[in-house]
Image (tube, rainbow, N blue to C red; front, top):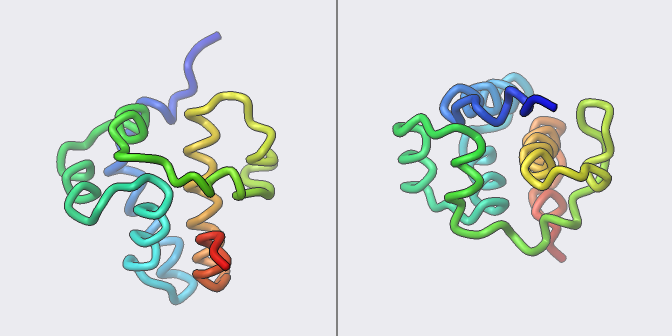
Length: 117
């Protein structure tokens, strides 16, 4: 079976779409950055470097400093699929990120998005 095309897409091409989605709903780039850094362990400089280097999604997650241990608490449906039921680990990470950005755009409280007390 052929690899999903999103794996080869650059994070730099997807990131602005995340920001636009949040901004359309009157949320900020900083909120998008906060959820992405929470999920992946990148700091702001690392995130900017991944964008500047135009790394693909596979590399973006492979080089992530560390996935948040609470990422497994992310549940729900994105693109018609329950994120907790996705078998492919890379696709699940991508969909986790999609879900977090979705929650920012919907105006969910940040403590809830980041699965904090």
